[in-house]
Each structure stands twice: as structure tokens, then as C-alpha cells.
Amino acid sequence: MNETAFQHRFLALRDGLYNRAFVLLGDADDAKDAVQETFALLWKQADRLAAMERPEGYFASTLRHVCLHMLERRGRTTALSPQLDREDTDDRELMEELEHDRRRLLQMLGRLTPRSRLAVTLRYYQGLDTHHVALAMNVTDVAARAILSRAVAQLRVHLCTGKNSN
Image 1 (cartoon, rainbow, N blue to C red):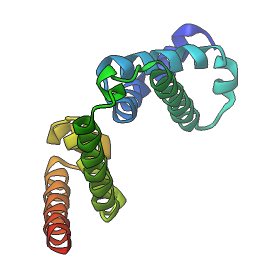
Image 2: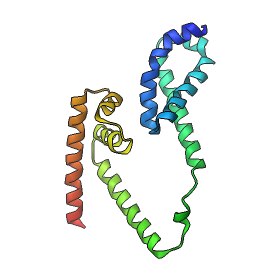
Image 3: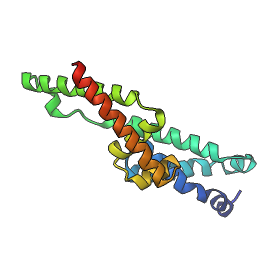
Image 4: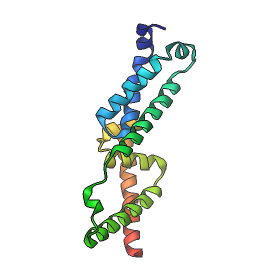
């Protein structure tokens, strides 16, 4: 398979791959890099791809691995904040409180359906607007707003019951 045939057949996958990468990585530049790296890796296997009946899944799988490697590299190279190394009592208490809140939030998110959890993560952690949440989840804008609305309502209930039980 030559480069023109490769581009003609697989370039249409670029936007979908970008959306997946953005959801996984949370950064537009990293997502573009992941898609580019995926295409570069798979160009080396162009003849193998040409023989596949549905190579789209192979693209998605390769992209996922590329994104995971990027996250691993990011995790290894991220330095700890010097503020976290301090032995100050106030800092330790603050960190313990933040860790407690983080665990509580994770518990609350864990009570949501996977679909609701994804919508909340995309909207409030990844910072996507509702339209892009809808695109990433392959639903309409109206459906994305409804999913988010129900999820936030559930989180409010969990938050209120959690405060009352503490």
C-alpha cells in the first residue's frame, strides 16, 4: 500500500482518534501527538493493514497503547511539588484533608453509572464543553446535557447524605 492509498483509506479516522486521545490524555497537544505517533507506527505496517477487513479497531487499540505510554512517561517525569516535601504540621493536615476529600469524591463517582461517570469526568475534569462531551460519548448534545444533569443531581444527593452521616 502506498502513502496515498494509506491516507485515502485511513485519514478519515483522524478525528475519531483525536477525540479518544483527548479523552485519555486531557490535553489537545498531547492528543495530536498521540494521533500522529499512531499514524507513524501504523504506516510501517501499511501492507498488514491493507489485508485487514476492519483495521479501525487496530488503529484504536494502537492509539490506546500510545496514550498509555505517554501517560506513563508523563507520570515518571512529573516532579513532586517541593511544597509536598515539607514536614510542616499544617501542610500534613491539609494534605490529609485533601486526600480524604479525594477519596470521598472517588467513592461518590464510583456510585454513578459508567456512562454518567464518563460524562462528569469529561465535563468537569477534562474541561470539555457539553458539545465536545457529546462528541466524545457519541451522543447528541441534548443527551449529553441530560446525562450530566442526572449525574450532578446524583452527586448532590451523595454529597448531602455523606455530610449527614459524618
